[in-house]
Image (cartoon, rainbow, N blue to C red; front, side, top):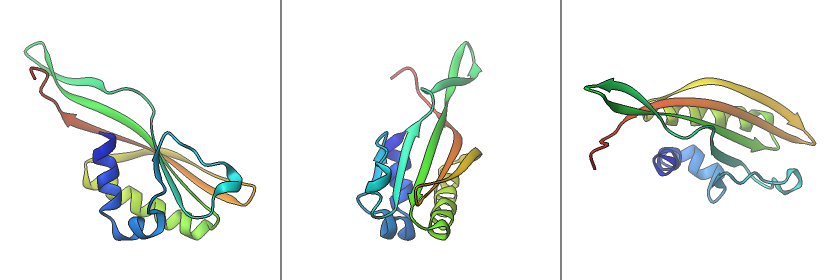
Length: 122
């Protein structure tokens, strides 16, 4: 799922332009190292089985946090909006978030939830 999320993000031209090479999994930049826009994809929980039929689950529900870090409030907000649209394109809806400012860095951390049909017989 992380790769699918990554592909959805880099498919957005604005995200690709602003955060090329700085879209990471699990790796948060040090505050002093934010030289450009960073996007961090961080799973909040493992996939959760959901939607059952005939004693088998049909979907996995994913909960991820995606952080946008920049030195500009406006750029952070714009990138976070593009992330929201990219996540919506793969059926993930925003379920909360936390905006922060610390030491010259603006951070927008949003939670997204989505379901994916699975084939457990494979």
